Amino acid sequence: MDLKGTSALVTGASRGLGAALVHALGKAGARVVAVARSKEALQEVVARARAEGAEVHALVADVGDKQATYAIAGSAAALVGPVDLLVHNASTLGPTPLPLLLDTECEDLQKVLEVNVVGPFRLTKAVAGSMAARGRGTVVHVTSDAAVNAYPTWGAYGVSKAALEHLGRTWNAELAERGVRFLTVDPGEMDTQMHADAMPDADRATLARPGEVAAKLVRLLQQDQAPARVELASFQVSP
Figure 1 (spheres, rainbow, N blue to C red):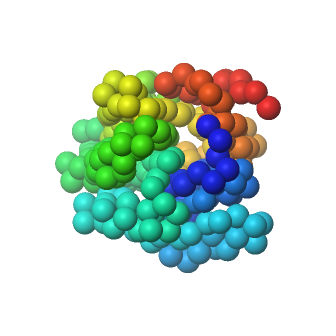
Figure 2 (figure 1 turned 90 degrees about the vertical axis):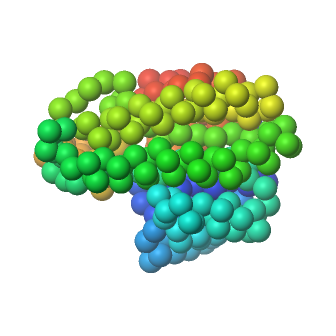
Figure 3 (figure 1 turned 180 degrees about the horizontal axis):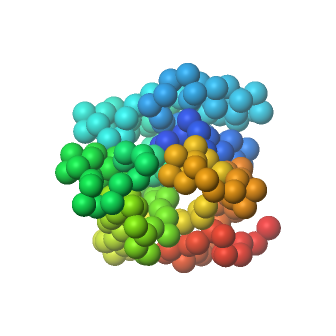
């Protein structure tokens, strides 16, 4: 995928991997719309990217809000044209410290699913039709090993990521022949605020830096072929 001139939409873009992706995609020549709820943090990310010469736009919105879906898609198209690359990076753990399933409130599980699964489903619906009509497009689901391994207290988050992965597989089965590819990417453990919230005692020195992970993901996107599910920690991409 040639990212130069590509119209990209990245959710959860105000910090961590999302913020790093905004910079990496902009550096690669993509025209990026960065979406997040935090206006101040998002504007800082966009300002830094623009200072480096990238075309990046801030869009303050909540992907978990049904009413925001078409506003996000429409605003992105107005800013950079029809979306060629959609990265579902926005995510929530739910309440922290992470509770056991028996202690998880139904409303908290519902909120996690709304942000981590239903939000991406709605936004993909809003943009994938245009991708299919044009015969090209890429949708990335940022996932976790909690989607394939069961960890105590990670129930709500793990369930949501497992559902997100299967959602991507189903989208791919339905739209691959129309030129729309879906990639599920496990970035591994990163030194982010979300990781700190979930595992406050973790040794940060052992964690990957979001910038390094974002650069690797961008190189992956630039490859003509890639597995449907990628663990970035172990996947080797061409320089």
